[in-house]
Image: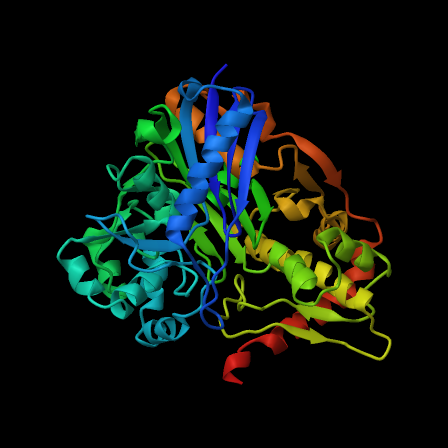
Length: 496
């Protein structure tokens, strides 16, 4: 039986999972990741802590699986995307905390780039709009703000990369500096047609090209782990950004296949095959690359998904746990006219407004904690509805069903509301860890454990289907109107 170690480095936690050759999870280890908020709108992580936590969980997962390290046939690495690290090549030490994808410190810089007329050129080359979400302006900020960094980069002394790159660099003892095409496609620095770094893009964003890693396929042996780290030298054979890995983990390989992953944010992707769909409101991105051809997907990114529930628990203290908040929300039949727009870190797709802020509308004397909890729960599927509508319009593909995975999918109120709003079945994945399963599959594919998706039934299994209620369209008609108006009023708040 082959065994694969999946390293899954996320925004709020770091974990490692051992899968067997049937895609069955044998063991898992997970550590929460400290969030650093130096200023309002700024979000950072300690890159060294990310690495030490990842190594600790990897060792624990192998031990809990009851296998020897030399029984591992491959390692797959999946990660929070857009979050970026710069480090010294000689010492391996980061020059600054990692700047997280949620960080909005470069909003003004993005405004200047758009005012200078770069948006159309950048969107044509990358499939992405200019936004603080992506990596390029984060890199430029560190080069400008860390003393001596830009000069050191120009001398070739610094390396940079997204979290996958940072983990592979450390796993290999500093020997390998690579990133896969899915992560590279989220930086604003890769030409989406060629799959290579683009010097003109680097010039626009003022990023030193020599800092960047080599771009590889998502299923490809790029090196071996240092034997001293895990007790064996194991091939690193899969690298994939978390959302594209979840696309694989949900068995979405054909044009029209779509999934939504509910983590800290919500990320919906629709595979469009060899066709690059150009969109003004959604990102065009690259799904996992296993062969010569580059394929495409439409993606919508919501910044506040599971983080909404976390905020209801920790910020508003509506309950001690997510389950308590869900029970509170379910204690009323609806939100009583209350609408909550969770733009706490701005709005992602399809509106892309870094200056929007969270807002609550429709409060009356009759509004209670339960109505606010319900409005918070409803805000998650309402955001996904906007994404799915934009995807269907831009791609021309009707969506017969939506596959979902991630922690929030255990919340049956949210999932049923989503089915009711979309009017199509919502299929919850059989394997909750679709992101880790997806990169395990890619790693196994690279070393010959599997040859095609049908070899791994876990990719397409469904644990439950949520069917839309017959009366849902009429029941939610007014809420949709209220939601659209509330979102409109929350926009550009910081510039009001």
